[in-house]
Image (cartoon, rainbow, N blue to C red; front, side, top):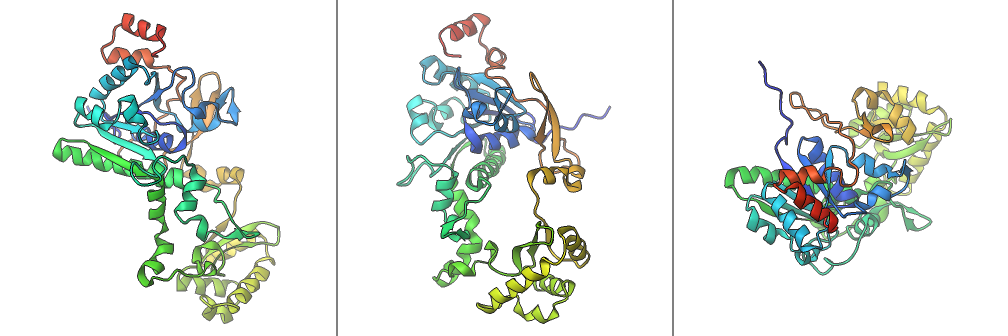
Length: 396
């Protein structure tokens, strides 16, 4: 009889102390990959995202999206008994992920040093805005502050002289969540060789700064930063921009390579522009204005048909509803359904990567606050009487 294939991280146990987006998305990825993730939440309140609007039947919609496939344990970490319970749970855990400001976990007595005494194989990951060291380590921050410091806003296009804010939390997800996941998986692999865990210091500023290579490369090579209007990826160049069409819609053109620019010029009937791809001002602005006029002559659908046949890097500008209904999104299975108590079926973002042999499809609904407290504590060896006393004392 063939054995059921295991999920990639099946058997890995994660204690999640985080709140809000960076930690939640990190542990969501680990959960989707098969890890057992236990959210350790504050009694009575839990993750702030539970009440972050817009709400669906009293629950934050972003919380529902980010916390499927996780269990919920309430634990008052400020109490001595709560601290002892957490350290006991760490004995059987593989990973701890936390998002407190530096110094908080040490004051609570649950820092890496304390946890390592109970389990030297633990992989302990701290996600913070500025990291555990450095002059800004204790400053509060959100995504906007971080992309400003990392230089992202400095190279962003300006509207009325003010840098445009990207519509995605790049620092939270890229600099925080994804850097944490990559580092945790690397530490788990290293542990298989050495038998020892590790402490991982993820700074969202550092992670976001690491994405700036495209803009930093010229400066690092020459010592001179290019002028603002020379940045290729900000829509200022005709070969990499967004254009309005005859029906008031927009298309994207990303003809970075010579051959794609050549294909574009031929498709729009302007072979005379072949040598203008990297033209400097004012010819650059003239070329872009010429393309703007050409693209306004046909609808978005018409242009997409023409450009796809011509092998040009192009695409539509969709709103959320259109993106959800696109055949690509449907065919790739990027949206899945989860049955949520009190709500019914809710749609979720599926794990985006595809494995040929290893299952990653899971559909456990987000947990109610403290839903698995008794189950988790019982598994850790606590009796029903001990659990009842913890509940009465406000520890759980």
